[in-house]
View (cartoon, rainbow, N blue to C red):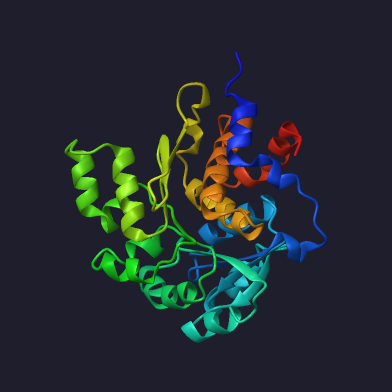
Length: 286
């Protein structure tokens, strides 16, 4: 018995789109990943590597001045630009070829609160993860007021509870299902909400919901490792840079994330996930 009904699954998540021929690197998109400060660039670098490996034509890491040497020493094909202040980010985003953003992995709470308004004001496809969500625990309504329909929120259960505490309370009290809770969250946020877990749920504001299980034949316990979620954020960002809709990017990114873990097996660490993607693509004949 095969692990997964491949033909049905690939069709439903649009794997064929990955093999489309285009003219040059800019037709595959340009993703910007915004990093945290010194000693905190690793998570954003993982996301950037994921975005590049999944096929974004260009990926740039936006780094504060204090961390540029640290980041540069670890980067080759990923580009680097200085993003210290709101004005820096505003100036960077004047390049309209940057068509997908990712903010949150080890960004820092105060840095997230300062930079998110600039990032969201340009209304480009944007993944918000980790600190970009936790930074608004005290006033989640202020985050929701900035969001737009091309955003993808990728919380784990703790981050979900910080911005949707009442919904998590209802789920925990069995007053609604986990799926209905994520649907309600997406409707409130007005964008895609992806709740990570063994059974990852992805919901749209209009009530669509996709379940992606990493249990049973698709069990991938090795994904419970530091940085795996940062790579997933990068996968989704890279797919949106390539032109996937936020919902399709979220579904495809989650599916490929598990496929990479299954292909690598025990001993997986986050850095391995982007590097095994080429083998996964070969197996899919992409």
